[in-house]
Structures are given as C-alpha cells and as structure tokens.
Image 1 (cartoon, one colour):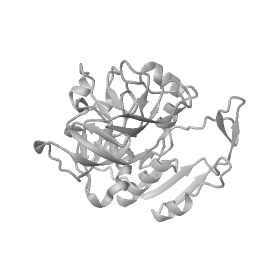
Image 2 (cartoon, one colour; image 1 turned 180 degrees about the vertical axis):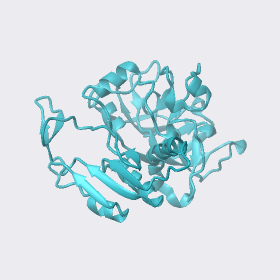
Image 3 (cartoon, one colour; image 1 turned 180 degrees about the horizontal axis):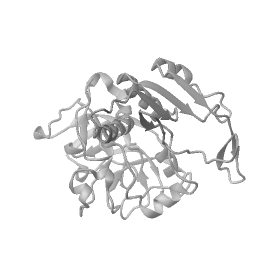
Length: 310
C-alpha cells in the first residue's frame, strides 16, 4: 500500500512536496497509527526554508511533522493500546551510546548530539496519512480531545518550563510565585498564559509585534482577555523583505531579527517564554552545524511518557 506524505529535501529551500510513498515499515514500531492532525511550528519553517533538518541515512528526503495526534489502527495485545485510542507521539529518540542525560531518561538534554527526532533529525515524521511507532513513544489522551490534542506537544513546552520553575524555586520554602511575565503572544505564549492563569497567577504578556505582514493586526487581545491576562505591552515594528526575499522585523529603535529570545525578568515572578523561536542572527544555520546538542526541547521530545488528563 501507499500513502500521502509531506516531504522535503533537507538543506534545499522550498523543496516541500506532497508525495506518494510506501506505507510505514514494520521496523518503525509495532503500533500503526492513522494521523488525525499535524501542527506546524518554527522548526518546520526552518526545515522548509532549507536551514535545518536531516534526512534518514541513505536517503535525500525527510517526512516532516513532529507535532501530531493520531488514532490507533492496530496494536499488539501487550502494548497497552487498542484500536481507536487517541494518542500523541513523542518526538525524540535517545542517544544510542548513551550520554549521561539520555541514560537518565532526559533525552531533551542530550549533550553529544547523537539523538534522533521524528520529522526533524534522521527519522521520518508524522506528516503522513499513517505512521508506525513503538508503544513506549506514545502518550494516550482523552478521546474527547480528538484533533485538539495536536496542542499537547507544544503545551508540553510550557509544562516543562513550569516543572523547571518549580524545581528551582522550590529550594526556598518561602517561594510562592504570584505574578508571571510571558514574553511573546504566539501560540506558545498563549498556552503559557493559559497554564499560568490556571495556577491562579497574575499574568502579564509582552509582545513586540503590533501587526502582521500585510494581513492586518495580529488578533491576540481577545485571546489574552479570555485567559484574564492582566496587562499587555507591545512595541511597534515594520516588516521588510530583502532582495533575496528574506523577511526582517525592524522594531522602533533599531534592527532586530524576526525571532526574538524567549526570556523574561521579574521580581517574585515565575517566567516563561512564548515566541516562535530564540535564534541569534545565524541561529538556524549554526544550530544545524553544531547539531544543537544542548537545546531544551519539550517533554514530549524526551522520554517523559505520561497520560494527559481530560
């Protein structure tokens, strides 16, 4: 059988194409999953732009897609899954050596760069009609979430941030965060604001973006109000295209790359970031060259398998 899949030639800009390819091989895993939805993030943009990504060994094309939700088609009796289950796949696979972090199950902290990632680094991703995967790399989610569970992987970025915040702040018995500053009101920033609001915090969202690229203003304010974010500050910017078609956002007061760092500062505040990315001016190319061994990735890119509660 064959299926449709979105593939690119890593390192070649604008090579994305919807291809007809063979069904996933049994060697990919014992659980067959039918893809329900796939999310697109900044990493996917970089791969499509030819700035990042690696094809599987011996091939020149990579199936992209690492934020996904699917429905189990078939699974072994001892896998813990049954046909019809809604699942979210984990992205990263540990370093086979392994390094000390991978050995401890913290694959997202791999220090020697020998990890692999579905849809990003040396393994086909989930932007296909079906994929196979080992049961240990699947997270069950409530059936009522259905395609909304595509947000589980990006939400795990924020969940991991809170986990680190709690671990660090928890060293003091007096630490009780009450205010949160979120820098960037993109999808991750909005999810961060949502989780902070659920914790009962006073939420502040800072976004440098005042308008889109000719499509009208970015409509963040109603979403911010819906999560009771208490204050929003924004800075104006312009979007310019270079002769090569590249885009740059120039905020008032000086030039700045499109992607600004995910960072915040505060006084008795728990801090999370919410921008599309945090690359320096040559960040994507440099990250590709160095294999980015110490990039912090969401928990679903690591070995932290759990169950999402409805």
